[in-house]
Amino acid sequence: MTGEQEVIGISGATGRLGEIIVRKLREHHPDVPVVALVRDLDKGAPLAALGAELRRFDYDAPETLAPALAGIDKLLLISGNAVGERERQHRAVIEAAREAGVRLIAYTSVLRASETALPIAAEHKATETVLKEVGVPHVLLRHGWYCENYLFRIEAAVDSGTLPTCAGDGLISAASREDFAEAAVAVLTAPDDQAGKVYELAGSSSFTFADLAAEAERQSGRPVKCVQLPKPEFEAALVAIGTPAFVAAMIAKSDMGAREGGLFDESRTLEKLIGRPTTSMSDVMASVLR
Ligand SMILES: NC(=O)c1ccc[n+]([C@@H]2O[C@H](COP(=O)([O-])OP(=O)(O)OC[C@H]3O[C@@H](n4cnc5c(N)ncnc54)[C@H](OP(=O)(O)O)[C@@H]3O)[C@@H](O)[C@H]2O)c1
Image (cartoon, rainbow, N blue to C red; front, top):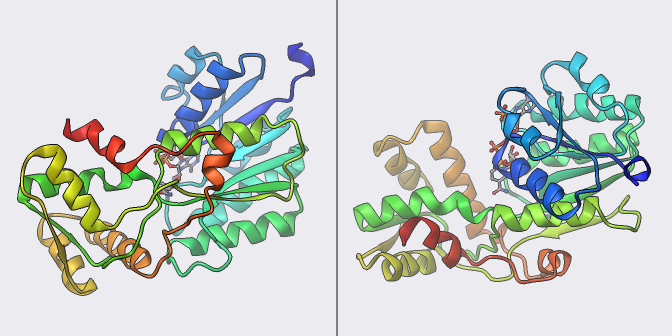
């Protein structure tokens, strides 16, 4: 049976999202051969223990790319985390996939990449354009924000009693990494052709920063007040508590994006794909507060 199965390759497999995807593929689709494409073979050892084949794959080392993709039918290209370098890196992967004869690329893009004003979207939009230009059949998994993005701010807010933001009443439809991982598995193992599909993936429910503060207060039993600041003051406040300047800038841009509606979605596409409501922010918060 294995010989007839399509081979699935996962890039960024040692990352937090990639590891969950490899684990779910192995648990729920044990007949499907999985290749974990990793920058560091030693770091990939736990994936090999799950039954995935390990191959070295570095977006910055083009000579590793096409050989590692040999025999792979479907590639999940998990976007890199080197902001500013990603269009070049992703182009190298997509061109190598064409050379290696990959039949479908699934790419983890960003919610409403075509029209969103989120500054982080530029590299995703550019990657979507490269996918079209290079001409490998592809499916877009456009991700909203991960609930886990907010955990370190919630923990800090419980300690300090304040949750600063510049997001106003912007609604955020976040979902957990587990939810996004499950969606990727559903798309990669779907019996029907996924080429050309675009999935706008976000949480089943939405929250504001005021909701986050109230829930943190409820779960921790300690007072947590949401404090709205203008963007420059918010960014400066993050730097003042030791946040590196580029991280503070990204957080402030993200919160402004939320303010402008860029993180809100009510399509429930993710819920439909995984067959259940997405994990609530409250449940994800409980993983650190309870
Ligand atoms: N929507 C959201 O809220 C959100 C939040 C965070 C991230 N993201 C995006 O989603 C992606 C996956 O998220 P995550 O939480 O799994 O991120 P992560 O834990 O930082 O994992 C990133 C993965 O990319 C790999 N990688 C980085 N540079 C590479 C290179 N040059 N060649 C090959 N692999 C490389 C890393 O390899 P190593 O293990 O060797 O470092 C790691 O496996 C991120 O990279 C980012 O683009 C989205």
